[in-house]
Length: 101
Image (cartoon, rainbow, N blue to C red; front, side, top):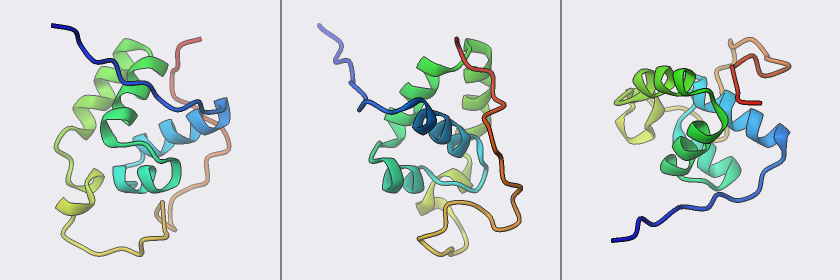
């Protein structure tokens, strides 16, 4: 039985950094990432697995697994669909997350 390997669209390094940044943000949903970049939750997980160090990926997965704020449907409050991050959140100018290089 062959395992189907998902292929991700080609992203620039800047886009990959932004996807990783959004995935780490507590209040940014997978739906917001899909709206902006066109990739599903499983594709975000695959990208994170590919781009991050194994220990960083495991820490991220443990953090977001089952987290209500990462899934639009599970949220108990309503937010504006056009907003991708909290207005009180500090602007990050570069990615500080450990990535493979």
